Structure formats: structure tokens, C-alpha cells
Image (tube, rainbow, N blue to C red; front, side, top):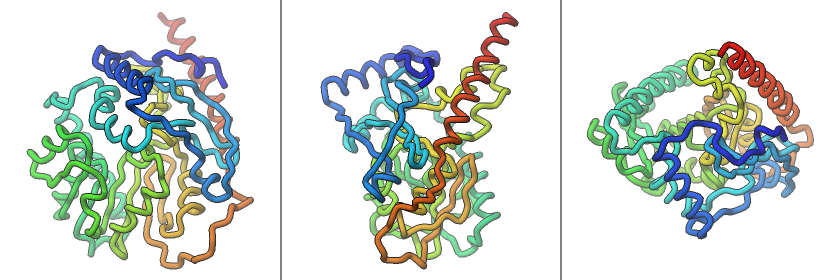
Amino acid sequence: MLNIYKQIKSFVYLNKLQKENIDILNKKILNKDYKLVETKCPICSTIENKTNDELISNRDRFGINIKNVICKNCGLIRHDNCLDENSLENFYKNEYRKIYTGKTSSDLDHLNNIFVAQYETGKKYYNLIKKLIDQKSYKNVLEVGCSCGGILSYFQNQNFKTIGLDYDKEYIEFGKSRGLDLSFGGIEKVKDKKFDIIILSHVFEHIPNLKKFINTITLNLSKDGIIFIAVPGVYNKNYYSIKHIRYNYKKILFLYYLQNAHIYSFSKKTLSNFFKLVTKQLKVVFIDEEINCILKLNSKAENKELKFDKNLSNDYFNFKFFYYINYLKFLLISFFLRDKS
């Protein structure tokens, strides 16, 4: 592990609100108000009950003491411990937004900016789906983890009936004020309904039990519908672009990508492996390295027990090459900027 990933201090600037809520989070963990549970690689341990981990970082970008490991069998990156489900729900209600954004949910300018950005994201998702999937018969959309609903707003403007779920009451109320049908809570709120499109936009990486979650979500998918998943891809070139020199060169380092709320860090290869090897219900019909992923029900699913694929497409060596090259790039840019100043 590189030295820069060993230090337990913030890699980014923190404002007062962020520092206060990181302290609150740490105290709740110390006092066991928030409980930590051990994780295992959801690909390798599910199939063959084995995992082989290597530590790559002792911290996230906020300086929270989170150990990030990579599974040497398949290359999936994850936290070695995470909050249990009840603790996570309370964390998202109370500290998450304040740590991640440095702003309160009552800041209307902040909420409006998020809504507008999400609306543009909704346009991007809609156009990608329209390009790849014959969706003329699709009528409704569910978004789990909808925030203030900007993505759904775009789909609603395309004449879809939309429903959104989230655990932030202020974000939900803001979305409702924009004419959206949003509710506080998770998938249990719509357990008897079927949807043509289910959107998980930057949600899947936050889920402790991926197999249980995706199997539950699938029960709400219509026969010919799709699940659209977007997660921050490990190799998304936009995250490490040289353009960040203009305003925040630290974004170029992979460490900036790591945060305590992201239990898993996926590449195209590792997310594809998950759906190929862990769940028989769904098949990947599109995925890119950014990552945008479209899933459909697998009508040819077999009832045979899953077995570990010895020829699994392992992303471990790809990541290790990226990990060191990315650090050298960061060092060179840091040196250049110091020299210029």
C-alpha cells in the first residue's frame, strides 16, 4: 500500500459542518450506536465461500478510518467493514449529506442546484435507454435513492408516471414541491407494484448486501422492463482528468474517489462479474466503463447451483497497474504545481 493511503487524516478541505458530522459519526461508531459488520467479496464468497484480500487504503478522502481492500480473486474493491443496515439508514438520515456536500438539506440554493444537475443526468439516462432499448411500451419509472427527484422530473416530462424513494426528508419535500411523487423509505414502500424502468443512480455502491437487494428489486420489475444502474466507475477517465488542475488537482488521485459511504467500488469487469456469477435472474444488456449498466430479466436462467468460474475475468492486475500509474501522475502534477508557485 502506498504511503499516501496509510495516513488517517483528511485528503480534502473540510468545512465546519463536515468536521462536526465526521466527529458525530466517529463517536457513534465508538459508542456502538452505529454497529460495524465485516464484509466479504460478494462475488467470490457467495460462489465458493472464499476471499483473498489486499489492503489498498486506510482512509477515505474525508480522513475517515475506512479500510479499503481489493479481492485478489476477482478485483472487486470494497470496505472490509461497513455499518449494518439499521446504522446505515440512520447515517443517511442524519450525517451523510452534511459530510458529502458540506451543506444542510435546508439550503434551498443547494437543493435547486442539485435538482438541475439531476435533471440533466435524467436526460442523459433517458437518451441512452432510448438508443439501446425499444421502450415504446414503457409507462412508469421507479427510482430508489432519488434524492430530490431531478432525474425523475426529466422522465416525467417525457410522459412517464414516476415514483421516487429516499431517506432524506428535506430532499423529498423539495421534490414534492416540484410536482413529483416521492416517499420516505425503501423498496418495501412499493412491494406490490411493477415498473418498466427501475433506476438505481449512484445507489448500488452503498448497499451492504448486494445479492439480497438486487433480488428484492427484481420482484418489482415488469416482464420486459429494465433496471438501469449507474455507479462511479473506478476507471472513469473523467474522475482523473488533467482538467482538474484548474481548480482542484487532488481529484486526479484515486484516493479522492474513495468515500466512507461507498462500500463497493466497481469497474465494468467487476460489476459484470457480479451479475454473471451471483444472480441468475438478470442479464447485462449494456455496460460501459463510466459505469452505466442496463439489466433485463434472464428468461433462460437455469436452476442449477452456481459454480465458481475458474476463468473468471479478474480485474486485480488491471487495478494495481492503474493504482501506481495514477499515483505517479499525481506526483508529477503536484511537483509541477509547486514548481510553478
